[in-house]
Each structure stands twice: as C-alpha cells, then as structure tokens.
Length: 75
Image (cartoon, rainbow, N blue to C red; front, side, top):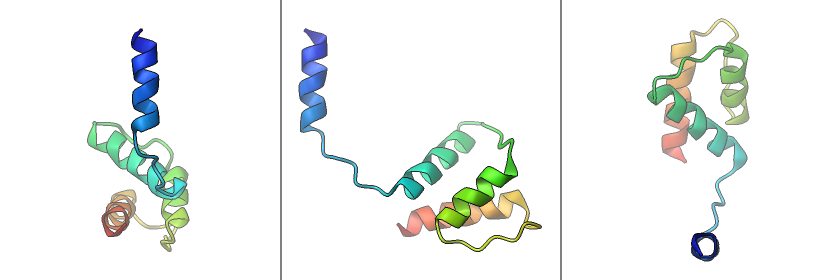
C-alpha cells in the first residue's frame, strides 16, 4: 500500500528541469556543507568549467568552490 501511495505522489510532484550541470554543482555544495572533503580537485574544476567558469589550474580549490556557489545563486 505504501508503495502505491509513494508512486502516486511521485507522479504529482513537479518535474525537475534543472540542467545537469546545476544539479551536479548543487550536489557538490551540499556534500561540502554536510562536512565532506573534496578529494579530487579535477572534479571541482570540471564542475566549474561545466558551469561556464574559467578556472586556472593554479587556482585555490576554496576560491573555485566559492565561485561555484555564486554561479548556483545566479541560476
């Protein structure tokens, strides 16, 4: 019975039309805010580039993450 109810609610929920790049960036920021530690800086740079940001390979990871946060807020 619970499965049927959850299925009905999933049909009624509005579809999420957020672009994949924004969704991935939001997941990154959510995991960092939850206390996660970014292990691979190239993933951070790739997410930033997918958002259209130009990132130097010498840029500090903290600065890049802050720029990703600002890009999400603009969306």
